[in-house]
Every structure is written in C-alpha cells, then in structure tokens.
Length: 255
Image 1 (spheres, helix red, strand yellow):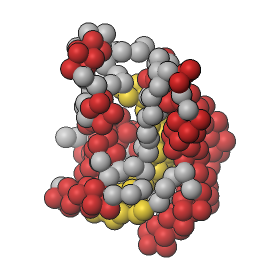
Image 2: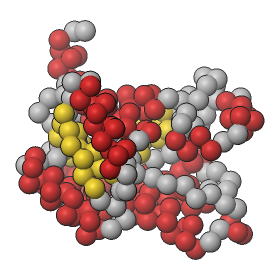
Image 3: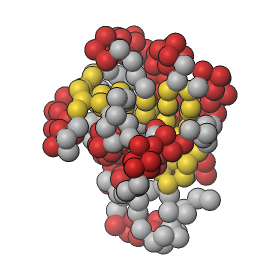
C-alpha cells in the first residue's frame, strides 16, 4: 500500500472508546480500530466475559486496549467511566457510539417500558457519552465522534416505532453536534447499517432473511466488517473534511 495512504489510515497514538464493544458489530469495530493502531477501550454494560473475549482478539491481532464498564443509560456511570479512562489514557481521540437494543412490537401493543428502554439506550445513552467525552475533545481542539444509527431511522420500519424514532433522533443529534463542535475541529458523523448478519438480524427466520435479501440490490446481508470499514474511514485521516454526514452501509436497501 502507498505509504501516504497507510499514514492517513493509521490511528497510531490514538485512544478510541467504543460503547457496546463487547460483541457483534461493536467487536468488529474494536478490532478494525485496533488493527489501524488505536488503543481501544471496550465498553460493556454487563458481560465482562464478552469484553475480555474482544480484548483477546485485539491482542491476537497485535493491538492493545482495556475494558471499561458502564451503562450508557446512567449518566453518573458514564461520567465515572469516562473519568477512569481519562485518568489512564489522558485523552479520548475517538468515540464510537455503538450501544443499541431493540424491543419490537406493533404500536397498539407497545408498552411504555419498551419505548423508554430503547430510546434510553439508543439515543439518550449516546447523548450521555457524547457530553462526557466532548469536554476533553473541546479542550484538546480535536476529535472524532461516530454514531451508529440504522436504515430504520431513515426509512422507518413497521413494528419498530421505538427503534426507528431513537435512531432517527441519533441522526439529528449527529448533525446538531457536527455544527456545534466543528469550530473545535471535532468531526461528528454517523454510519447507517442495513441488515447485518449476526446481532439483531439473528432473530430473523430464514424466510424473513430471504425476503429482505430480495430487496437488497447487492443481493446479500451486510457483514459487521462492512460497517467497521466505514467507521475506520470516518475516524482516519481520510475523512478530514467530512462532518455531519450519514454514511449508508446497506447494500442499496435504502438510497
């Protein structure tokens, strides 16, 4: 690879925090950032075992990192966790808000807690972590924030009023913060996956999966690595003039 391109993609000397980094898409993002040279802080809410499995894979790939436990829904836990990271690493150069849950149901049958739980993790949680991390980024006059949204937040999805609303709100948060933080050289973008193999799509039947693939122009489900590649681009020197954007990684499912 051309040395100039390699340098632009390198994250050597950078510290990256990935929320929900212990499994699935978050794990793929952690591994990709680590391979690019970043020191990766793997956030998890409950499973320290899964976080350690991610860290083991990072080390196998020649990377470095550490775990940090906090629930993004709890602002006090977030503040404590970020303070712990800053005490150890001095700064956070990259934040990837990947934590997310789904509790699907038709509107007429959706319970208040189904709505509140999904919004609190997928949207309010990202706000909590952005607020905590951006303070140091502002002081350092630089940083990258990448929010993982969803095609459901752009196109809507029946049975996912809560999830679609939260992910649409995350796009609004991304654009507002991009404008607010640009004067401090902090770039804020989002990636919007379509249907990605594993993770939440693992709950689909084969019939449901086949029906979705029939509507994807590229004719396949996405891979976690497809999304992780887009995240790496937004965190690297390749995207120095990109902010407030939503990068769709959906095989053409939504254009």
